Image 1: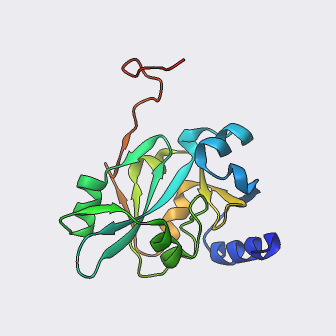
Image 2: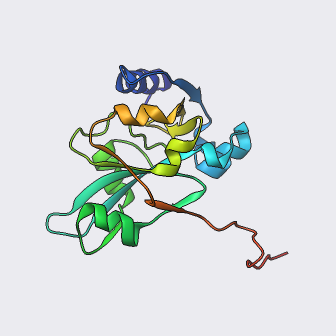
Image 3: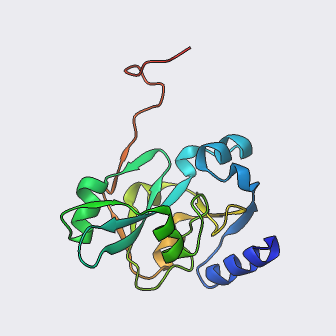
Length: 175
């Protein structure tokens, strides 16, 4: 998709949801760790949108927003919210079909109105968050309160847990 069309689509999805800033990025640097390192953002300010699926007939989908420093609790918190016996991360093709977005650019803005949106409470404690912009070329920087303006949003304590440090004391390092 054309860069200007992507921006216009994102701006239309953001209309009426409050203050935000758009941030253009190199699509090769859209993945969270690369983006934060290249552009100087803190991982704890980066909020990832993850599509999940509850294993039922028919399957039940939802979008979850968690900080990059956290890991979504799919096996307990998500399946509890979905009301299913099992839950997992949605496949990339399901994510694309539901959101119209590529992995690395999934945003909460412009999602289907009937798709539940679960936000980990830790996201709401940040002064600002960096969200995907619907493509790998854009990010949205906004106060977390912007998430409360979206349909079907539920803020959940414990939806995600703080991830262990990558090079923590209990991890082996390879030279």
